[in-house]
Length: 172
Image (tube, rainbow, N blue to C red):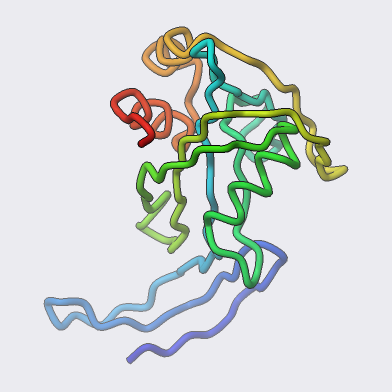
């Protein structure tokens, strides 16, 4: 088993038809998206405000509230990705970092794993968003951001989970 026929290979995803033997010995052909993964950061200032981006996402149909985040580039680890993305998208660097864990975004058809971090001790640096990124940088009171999660106004999965996981973490 383990055969794969590439159907499409783009800049971000690799879609293939894979033959797999399941634990019950059933053999299936599955459409699987291979993705390099990503990293996102809950960046909080000394006033318990979190940096959130309002970002236009065509695939999602409009504007989303999101944590600074991005795709892991070749040769990068998720800890390098998240530092780069915080600088590029939000114009921030951080002194203290802690992992909040990782999760599979859509395991029914994709292997994308997103790594979550919390960052404190923030300082401004030059931002450098990509031309295709339409981003507004906002600072929200952390409790207000959590309320937006519970009300459904924040519906991006990595942002919801990152904000909820950061609630009980203290960077040591």
